[in-house]
Length: 341
Ligand SMILES: Cc1cc2nc3c(=O)[nH]c(=O)nc-3n(C[C@H](O)[C@H](O)[C@H](O)COP(=O)(O)OP(=O)(O)OC[C@H]3O[C@@H](n4cnc5c(N)ncnc54)[C@H](O)[C@@H]3O)c2cc1C
Ligand SMILES: O=C(O)CCC(=O)C(=O)O
Figure 1 (cartoon, rainbow, N blue to C red):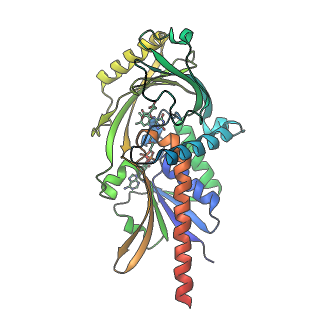
Figure 2 (cartoon, rainbow, N blue to C red):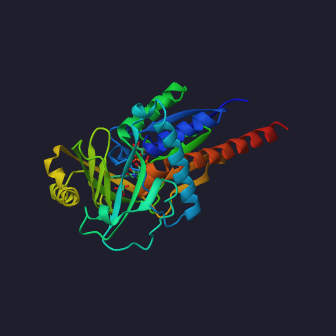
Figure 3 (cartoon, protein in one colour):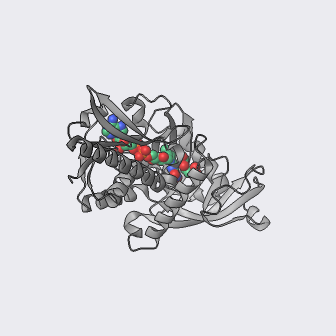
C-alpha cells in the first residue's frame, strides 16, 4: 500500500507537535510541514510556555482535562529524560494568588499538576494585597528551544519542512492526500474563519536568575515565570489588536505590576520586549472537512484556535488531530479498494 502524503500547514507549537505525533504514530504516511514563518518568528516563540490551563468555553471540561493531562504526562516524561535540556523543559513551583476568593477554589486541573494545595497564611504574608492562593508545581518550557527540538525530531524521522505561504489549501491538492491545518491566527484569512480573533500579548523577558518561583495573579494579567534563560514578566490581553510592535507604556505597566508582587525584580537586567497575537476562539477547531473542487476531494483536518492555552494542551490536541488523520486515511483506503472492485 502506497504511503499517504500528509501536509501540515504551520510551524508553531501546534503544527510541529501535530506533525511529530502523526509521523511517530501513523506508519503508512509521509509528513511535510509547510509554513511561512518558523522559530523564532511565530506566536509560539513569544509564549511564556507555562502549563497553566485556560478554559475554552466551547469545549466540555472532561475533554479539556484529557488534553491537559496528555500534555502534562508527555512533557513530564521528557523532563525526566536526557532530552529535557535540549527540549527546554523543566518543572517549576510557585503560587497563583487572588485578591478575592475565587469561585473555583479547586480548579478542574488541580489533580493534573503536582502537589496542588491552598497557600498557608504564612505564605500569603508575602502578598499583602491578596487574600487567597494556590501553590503547585507544573511544567514550563523555553518555547524557542522546544520548537527547534520538535523540528529536529521531525527531520530525524525523514519528514520534510518547507517555507512557503499558502493562499488556499487547495494549492496542496495535487501533491498531498491529506492536509492538516495548524495555521493559528492565519486561519482567519486562510479559511475565512471569523470566529478566530487576535488577542495581543506583550511580555518582558528579563535576566533575574534569583527568581525561582512563579507568581501568577489569578486575574491572569500579571505573571512572573522563571525559565531556563530568563524570567517572563506579563502581560497584556488586548482583543482585536494585531500590532506586533512593543508599546513602551505597556512595558512600564507590566514591569511595575510585577515589581509590586516581587520587589527584587527592580534589579532585573537585560530587559527585552516581546509581542505575540494569540489565536483565540471559543473552542479549538479540531475537526475534519472535505474540500471539493470540480468533483475532486481533499480531506482536511483542522487544529487551530488555541488562544492563551496552546502550550498547555498541545500534545492532547495533536493526538486528536492524528486520530482524525487516521480516519481520513481509512476512508481513502476504503474508497480506493472500492474503485478496484
Ligand atoms: C504573550 C503570550 C504568552 C503566552 N503564554 C502561554 C503559556 O504560558 N502557556 C500556554 O499554554 N500558552 C501560552 N500562550 C498561547 C500560545 O502561544 C498559543 O496558544 C500557541 O502558540 C498557538 O500556537 P499555534 O501553532 O496555533 O500558532 P503560531 O505559533 O502562530 O503558529 C502558526 C503557524 O502557522 C503559519 N501560518 C499561518 N498562516 C499561514 C499560511 N497562510 N501559510 C503558511 N503558513 C501559515 C505561521 O507562519 C506559523 O508558523 C501565550 C501567548 C502569548 C501571545
Ligand atoms: O496565563 C498565563 O498565566 C500564562 C501566559 C499565557 O498563557 C498568556 O499570556 O496567554
